[in-house]
Length: 264
Ligand code: FPP
Image (cartoon, rainbow, N blue to C red):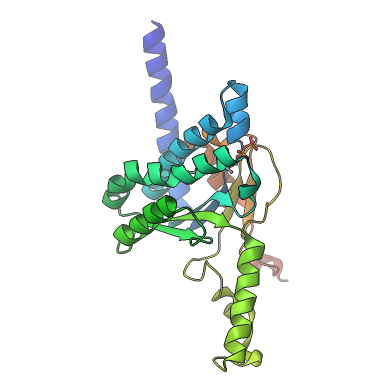
């Protein structure tokens, strides 16, 4: 009896999800979704597990959400996996986090290739441990010709650091005579950022109840729609992503201007 009921419930859930997906796809989907995956530590603490168990569970959710985002037609998914400030964490936690890309890609790269996913990374790759760098570079090389979902890991990434580097490179190009100071514009700066080949995020999600940007894509998020949830990252699922997308689809994006019907 209980089994039947559970099965029935599962069926109800999956029907609802299918319906919701269909409805969401009839409207404009966010092309680029960026996620600050937060709450792994609290998820583990609630279960009296070590913090790293939360990160490991979080890695499984990365897989799940990547697959789902690809299936429903999201074009780019940027995930904040490690910030330039995260080096301040205890050595063992940092070491564990630096092993995750290797484990994730070691396990799922064949599936990502099959699903036509293109793996990218933004952040300072050179100062990552050799094994992390190797895993990420291999994944980027082996998926470079795929043209499905772009899975963009923000790894050893900090937005202020990115902007400082961009400014430095612009100054160098001016000094070397490659460009003149007069051509410096927002568009030009865009082209010196690590996201130069990506569209700007349409939707930013942060999990775990924290409501801040934590040095994430400060320039690129200027006109992004934000969605915050108390759900901890390891508890995030397809239904949560749809909640965020449905909220996005009710937003009136004006980019500082007015929409047609409001002009008069
Ligand atoms: C923040 O939660 C989370 C991180 C610093 C790491 C996020 C990494 C993953 C979700 C896995 C990444 C997977 C791959 C494949 C690279 P927190 O530890 O600050 O949580 P807390 O605020 O509850 O302590």
